[in-house]
Structures are given as structure tokens and as C-alpha cells.
Image: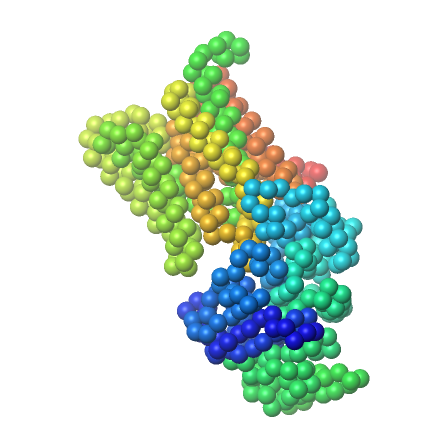
Length: 263
Length: 270
């Protein structure tokens, strides 16, 4: 992690579908940092990622990435941002193979009116190896399990050769052991490829051992810092509106939200 | 069979069938995969309204068909893009609005015009040299655009938001695709008819969808089914003395039901 600021929110207020989703956000994300974004449903987590992608522009203040206003990003900047959206239900019959899906990550780099080259195909194979899916290149995407599909979508982001990875709930709808394997994969890729990663999630306990910092948001930025600093009972209880217990075990900090055993 | 091929009108009809069968089935793949099936129905009726206005004021009906169908897809696309109205709701409004206009224009003609009704039900055997030239030019234009922007269309069809996030001009390409759907409907209007053209767009692609998990193969199968159905429709309608548009649609529908039975995705027989 360096001291170079890659993403900067300056007094950013952002509305989504005519509703203010984020208010007066001030936040700096540094190069090579792994940041988890947590908060209840409707707290503005996804809006935060979409504003970085330039899909939503702030009504007040600014959101910048690579020192450019996000809503004015050129293709060459966008190519440096790998995005993994919330995985909806993929139609099992949709005619697309794993290779075709990952290749889509190269399209903006290839440019209009050009076809993928052998180099692009090699990059796709390499990305599939990185996520341990190289044996599935010709498989229909819809035939894979949820965890395997998520690995393919991560490969699609990696094939862009990004500097920044934005991930929106990458472990949703996946069984617990696979969730951990996905988070470990992301953590290893982040370290090996020196990526800056912003990961939106509800799984606080799963990501806390891996992230450098956590941002707790609920329309506003309520806390930002190391997991042990952000995860305190008073703040979390106020944000989630339910009794929260924070406990430590084996050097890790764990959160229990609204469990009747502890109320 | 060879005697029939010596007739010039049959030759024109067969060439038109191949082009229309190919263009409709290729564009139909995007229509099926992007859930735009209803927009095709609405646009074909808008094009028919344009034809009736052309006959009413005695000016080239095809040019009005182009204007009406383009305006329909662009307005419907804009309302959807801005989130003012869902696509099916706005298509529903335009579907009835343009049919009302067509009925109004026909009523204002005062005299019965058989050619207008030809556009409603289609008659590929009456395609003229001029019609064939328009079918060829617009058909080639649509196929060229599919070829040039194939990878971008593929991406926005699979995941439009992701495509936009990675720098693909998804909004612009969506409007281009709607424009291509409108042009495809216009070139097919006279031969298949406003009511039946939609089947030639949707059914070959829907049949191909049953048969493969690969996008490239889906295009290939759809094209083969589309061309076979439209050319087969011409032969059958000539031999059996049946209306060409209806024969083609019944033929392609039969192929769709066969694809359902033999689909590796359903496994009834395979």
C-alpha cells in the first residue's frame, strides 16, 4: 500500500433515482489498499461504486479516480477499473461460454471495429488460470455453479489488466466454504497484482481478516479505519438498528448482529 | 420446379426471401436475448401506419414506413433509457396508437386500396425490382453493422451495465440496435406483411436458442432456419397456391416446435 491517493470523494453528495443515496462523503482510497465497504441495505454502498465508475455523477462535490472526475473518464481510464457487479441470476440457457464471457473484459481495450487477437486470447487463458478455471474455457457459463461463475466474472475483470477492482457483494448466493475461497482468491490477487480493491459486502466477519480498512456507511460515512477500530458495538448498533455484539477470537474481530442469544 | 424458376417474379421473390430470411434471423438473435420481442410487434404496426399515410397522400409509402418505425423505436428507447416508462408499456401505447393511425388513414382514403392490405398480410411474389434494390441495400447495411459491432452487441446483450462500466458506449449501441430492428421490419414489410413479419424475426432465433449454448452457433442456426423457412415458404405457396406470408410463418413455426422436441436443453428426445 502506498500513499498515492487513487480514489477521492470530496464532499460528494450522490442521488440515485431521484433519492439522495450518499451525503457529503469525504474519503480517500490509497493505491494497493484493500477496503471493505459495509452498511445496511439501502445505505448507498452500490451507489458509491457506481459513482466511481462514472455511471452516476454527484449532485454536489466530486468523485475522482486517477485524478480525473469519474463521470468524465475516458476509455483508457475505464479499462483500468475492473468491475464485478452484483451477480444476478444468470440464465442457464444463455448462449455464452466461459471464454466468451472473459473475453468481454478485453473489448474496451481492443476498441471498436477490431477483433480479439491471439494476445487477447492468451490474456484470457492467463486470467482463467489465475482464478483456477482454465479447464472450463469452452463450458457454457450457465452450467457452472455460483462460485465458479463468480470466479469467471473475476477473471473477466482481471483480463482488463486493471489497477482498481470494484466488487459488489461478490459472495452473495454462494455456500459458505466457497465464499471463503472467493475472498481468499481476491485477497491473493490483490497482493500479487498490487491491486486497489473496494469490496462491498454484508459479510463483515468474512472480510475483516483480509481488508486493510473498512468504511461503514449509511447514507453518510460513519467510520473508516482498521476493522478493529470500525467494528464497535455502539456505532454498529446505531447504524443497523439492532443489538450488535463484537467479540474477538484468535486475533480476529467478529460481529454478531441481532442474534437473540445475545439480546 | 425448374419451370417455376424461369419466371422473373419467382427469381425476385427467392432473392428477397434469402435476404429477408437472413437479416430477420440474425437481428432476431438480439431481439430474443435482449427480451425485445414486443418491440418488434409494435414497430411493424408503426411501419404499417407509415405505409397507409404514404398511400393516403400519394407519396412513397416505404419512406413513411421508415420514418414511423424509427420514431417509434427511438421514442420507446428514450422513455426506457430515462426510466419514464418500461419498454413493454410504451410499446403497448405505440402499438395501439399507430394501429389507430393506420385505421384512420385507411378510412380517409374513401376508396378500397388492395395494395395497402398487401402490406398487412404480405406478398413476396409481388416484389418489384425497386423493392428488391431497397431490400438489398438496407439488408446489407444491417448485416454490415452487426458484423462491425458484433463484439459490442454481444457484450451489451449479455450485461449492459458491465459493458457501460468498462467503457463501451452501451446507450448509443442500444439505440443503434433498435434502429436496425426498425430497418429490418421495414424491408420485410411488403413480402411478409406487418402482422407476420414479427414471426420471421423471433421464431428462427427462438428455435436456434433451443439448440445451442454458443452465441456464434445460435447466429448460424438462426440464419439457416430463417432462410430455409422464407425460401421454403415461397416454394410451398407457389406449389400449393397459398398466401406466401402465412405459409412462411407456418413453416418456421413448425421448425420451432421441432427445435423444442430436439433441444439438448429440454431433452425430450436427445
